[in-house]
Figure 1 (cartoon, rainbow, N blue to C red):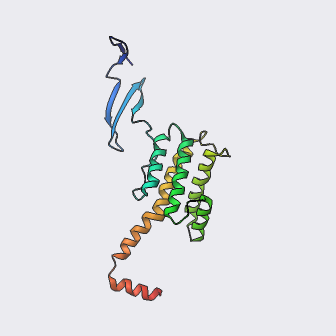
Figure 2: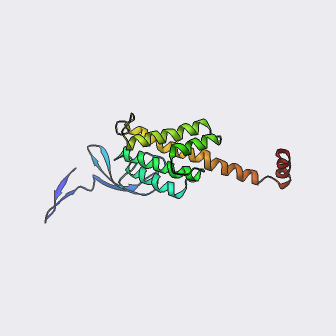
Figure 3: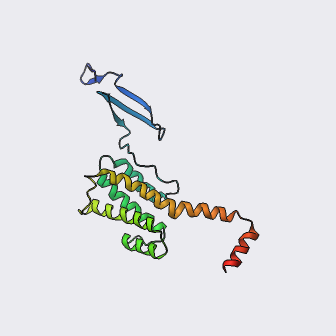
Length: 187
């Protein structure tokens, strides 16, 4: 960077090193500076490679998800703990009590939850628990785990909320006579 001193105190850097632009992902404003060929984002803080929340994500879950996304780079452990909280809230939307996450997952398994989704739920639960209570998984040592948990939350929502909504909408679009025949067949 090319510093220039400002009368009255302070240092100004050459505008050639400071850039303002638009994020290709979210189309929001970005400010960054180049230092020896490395781009350092100044604004917005908390840019994360985590995926955007699923469009069908319930609002209360989305708040925690977005907060986790904001802090994921600075604190993967904090992000993972927030994602565990988001999962606990999501389980309420899926029919759980929200009191005990392990029990809620067990209840979902009893109601026919696919094995892959059960495993995704348990990964988020265990990794999130270990973020708060020291265990065998250290998210600080492996921040990629935290990034993967974002994808698992979205996969759970796709399987348990979005896909059933799409199928129900398609079924509802069948002619009434066909739906009545199906209901007679299935009793």
